[in-house]
Length: 246
Length: 256
Image (cartoon, rainbow over all chains, first blue to last red; front, side, top):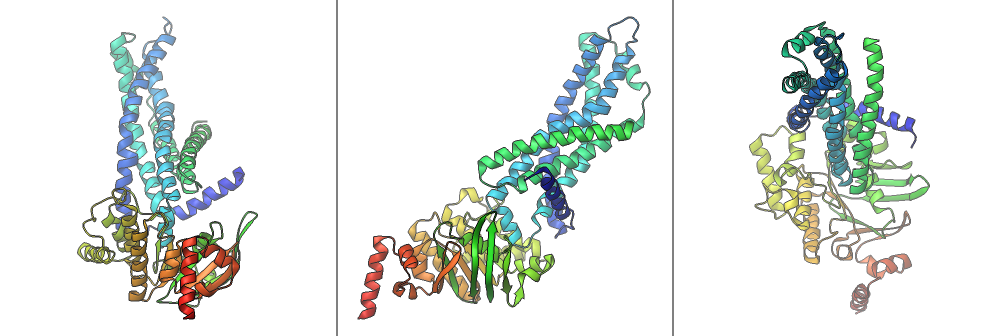
């Protein structure tokens, strides 16, 4: 199958996903389950990575701007900008593409190869709507929250790294993060996060839903899903940056 | 009644179903038999609408499936129960949740009413004290019973079973066969079973359709199958010495 066919099939899949759920209560139950699986369980790893990467970004910046001509508050400023504009929305989304993407593909793929999806269809249930819509809604509306926490922890990690290494002072760092704060940058990060969250839910769902074969193919499909989700995020990141900041 | 008229189905270059016609009546257990790769599963999945034949029609009580809207198809499927080869139970749900799922999805019954119905069908398939167990904690036979319970919980008009006996010991296989036939008689369901199991053919085959290379090679009852001279059928059904002897004994009895 060529790429155009895959793209066409992906958008046809979305047509089935975005239909009115057949039963409100079942949809709410699924939403609660996905919130736990895809949302709560992703918080820990995102927070952990954000905290340490924030520290690394601050240390790297401090070491690379070690000049008498460059004011120290630029370390805080650069750390804040890198974390809000790129690290938190893009890097965290790539991490979630790996963690959540493989989970979505393998869970839906296993349902496909064990005929559980056929069972849903035979019962008269729109399986795409039932399985994928709660995932899309959870990721699109919950991941901005995860990324907001990642922004906070990244900046906090940068400050703590300065405190522990003595490369810059708290006053300089706080001056830097307060310098030229533009609320639009935060909204820019949230817009990107929501677009990436949509990709994280739908591209792996596509790979899982249309898998053919057995457990080995489900494994291969999970790997393919993570690769394609990451590629799509990186490409969209380029276009979104150009459109929103360019 | 389900009427199948001259259906053709291909996958790429492989022409799997080559013009099959058949009818399936209420209160009758119909069996589709044939070698692996003869098109049995594709045939049954075409009846269910999981595959779309390129040619031919499938009519449910006179209504052509091809002409139904997506909503009409979904409504029809609410009247269909299906027992899959691997049971296809939702593995992260308990037995009770599995059986209750269609009720939750399509009825407005209270929790108590749903539980009552679930317990009734689980009792009907002789499965007690398993409500809170997960499919992985059950034997193959018990999983099949749960799948049957889930298939009949909505009082279906049509029941389809894809190799319901595969992987089961002979005793459990007979129990499952008898259960399906009892349910078919009791609720006047149209039952179509896809099987390899010759015991099922002999025991419950009120109507048997033999497929070979995607063509309907033969049709008859379990009594006719003893007398048929069709070489393809006899080669398939009486390939084991045991069944050859059973046939000889049957024909000798018949002559007397």
